[in-house]
Image 1 (tube, helix red, strand yellow):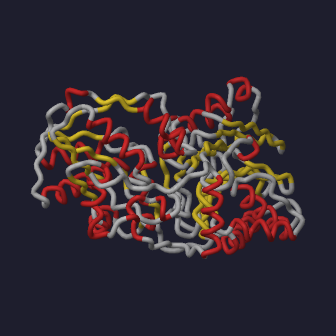
Image 2 (cartoon, helix red, strand yellow):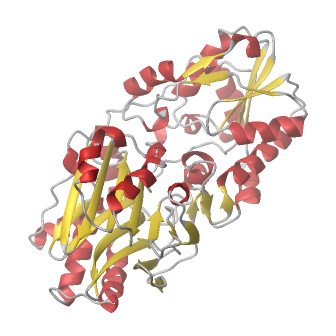
Image 3 (cartoon, one colour):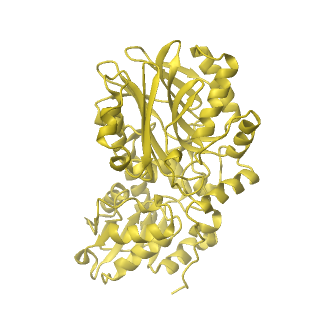
Amino acid sequence: MCGFVGVIGLEAAAPALVLGLQAMQHRGQDAAGVGTLNHGRFHLHKDLGLISQAIPPHVIERMPGSAGIAHVRYPTAGVDIGDREDAQPFITRRPGILLAHNGNITNVSEIEDHLREQGMHVLSQCDSEPVLLVLAEELTALRPAGHTLDDLHTALKRLMARVRGAYSVVAVLEVDGQETLVAFRDPFGIRPAVFGRHADGAWMVASESVALDVLDFKIVDHVPPGSMVVLRKGEAPILRTVSPQAARHCVFERIYFARPDSIMEEGRVNNMRWALGERLADDWMKKGLEADVVVAIPDTSRDAALAMAERLKLPNREGFIKNRYSGRTFIMPNQATRDAALRLKLNPIREVFDGQRVILVDDSIVRGSTMRRIVRMVQDMRPKEVHLAIFSPPVAHPCFYGIDMPSKDELVASLYPPDRLEIELAKTLGVQSLTYVTTEGLREVAGDRICSACFNGDYAIPVSAAEQAYILKNRSANGKRTAVTPDPVR
């Protein structure tokens, strides 16, 4: 999972790009980069670390241009990121294109093999580079330079026929002799992309609407699935369909990844989380359970916990103090880092838990190891009972589309029979009960235009056994993860 922002039409693009990017630091903590186009010349800087580490002020001050893109990354494919060359954006000189993307290309091995046959070598471990090289190849096959809007449309149609997976892409290049900002999404629109306009005629495109908010850009629309949007200062956006399918937007973006104040196709993210919390409360009440207090595991779960507490007529309390300088443990590159980060991240407040029957609310359980440690921290606070409530269904299938949900045997929900999962996993975690939102409940809240393959195994884009093996092998190398083994039943 990554985040990108692109702008065109500002007097100085680089400072705006970095400000917009900072609103999406939650989407990647491993690397960041920024690039601009100024009178036919590209300028690029990228490095490892948080935005403030990777893009120092003196770089921004010396980067001219009114058009550009910026990116934050955490890797879900390739070896553990340790080289700034794996950071985005990427540049190709023939033709001149600056490009970044969010998602995961499932047939990257096939694409790289074809590129090598054409004498084009991929130098990084990032799957954005093959996408860039395919676009460059298709454009130059039409003509060496002076590409038109029709050329771009044709090249993207060919690209979408060759590149499989989930991807939202932003690029800066010259089209019809003009500096142009382009954004396009895979045919199912799995990964997000939104664009908006400033009062002075400048345009911005980003992975989340919060990047637009920071710079007072007003949302115009979301990039439709399988379509491209062409943006130039002072001109109306040019929208063309390329290879659209029925939308299958990633529901895990809404559940976990996106900021709650972001706006996606169906509306504000926190509204969906609130509705899922209400549905979770209904499912919890059907079990005839009782509790004294509802506590969110911060931060993603706050809206659902508030909704659940309101529905159950229980007090909602802040039970954890979060270290704001600690990153999100789910996207840490390996288990050892996640262990250390959690110890820094959350500190429970004893008075909230002591002697109470507590409902802990969280967005999901993936490997189970983080939840196990949180429960142990809470148990040290001497609660009378601990109940877990999860406002998503069980994560039982790996994601091949850009969220780092690993192989099936690492997903704790896949280790138990579905009809015994809540009971057995509750015992493993050491809690009195575990309640998930059902897949039916998720559909009722989120609708049918979603990708929920991590819950039900229904993959919008088929992933062959060879492609799955390639992706999982690279993920194993990216942090040397091992399978989760349940604790003995207590």
